[in-house]
Image (tube, rainbow over all chains, first blue to last red; front, side, top):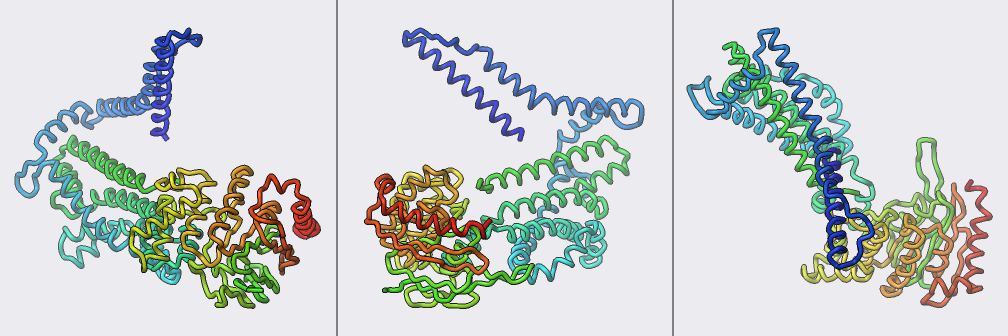
Length: 301
Length: 262
């Protein structure tokens, strides 16, 4: 929505540019310019308007948030925004130091968390997307598995942690297992829904052409379902990133969740706040990356 | 009379939630090789159902359908369909949509260059060479429908099945495409069965117009032979008494049955 607005704004600026150019051309050709040339301030004004509409609100929102935070921190023991900022500069000045297994830089924490999410999520994608295709395409399988999925899906991801610990006897694979199970369902369900919603016309085309199963999959099913798959992927990544902090708090090792817990034990509240922001920004970046990818595969009808 | 497409005593019954619905009853129709036959009737009379039966997308409850002497057991590229809503794959270009069909039909026997040439020729036939690289959402409704026609013709089908191919287009585009369709069908000599609810379109394009009664239990009420010489031109025919007589015949048939449809 907002992207479109920016685009519109841009177009109007371009249109004004053109108008100016035409007026100038008319003048240089020696003709009498009857219409008044567009005022030169209009371009600058359009830019200012775009700024007011697109940049000002988020900046004001952030300012208000920091102000409230400052007020709360003035009356409680919560660290102030300034103190947190100074601490953050320090944390990020050396993101990749290593002082033993429990004291590593923020960069390592982020990377280790991302690696866990990547492994759990990757395994879930490898299982979930093909399973989704199967469930969507074979009605019998769908009816067979839907009740089980309906029961397992609402279970809190952390409820699976003890099962993982019991089976794998180790913290690391147990954390990955939790990510796997929690990011599995959105991909299965969205892919299956996508397959059942492939327009009938496309399938009729495939029938008239008598496409081979492989061609049917690669030329019709896969492209038709891809947007749904990517929605599932986006939801899954979101869930996985939500869960990783909690999982790491419980399993330990290097990672953002463990870092938060460790700093709680050290009573370093600034670091906890920094970690919260880092988790937020990384999650946002992951989601935007998938959205960017999804836009590439959206087909206007 | 040579019978290229035979429809014999076809009944079509749908099992719906509210019980059995007899869509078609005792339908008989023969189409000669190279002939252009239209199916016309009120909406919901089962003309598209009949076309889908010939396409093989549906199987009849009773009766037999044959194409070139062989029973129609399922859909296949030898009976190409142009669907009403173009049904182009949005992730393929115009060329890609046509190529998919060409590749399927001729991929076993021809080189890639030959296949590409076939797809290009099919697009040239409908006047869309310039839009070959465009995606369906980048071209107009009329152009999409022409790509659909090119896709169908590129398969060199025995029978071309048109399901209200111009139904969703505005009047001007429609008139243009009707003339183009006549030219294309004449050039390829393909046997054609077209579903329409447009009286002018049916009379203008067809050698025969099969007029269907209303459902339930619809059947072919009458078949009109259109003995107008080809090539036909819409403007010249507008004041042609024979053309107007044919038109009136079809209109009267439909008008007499409007009550049941309403």
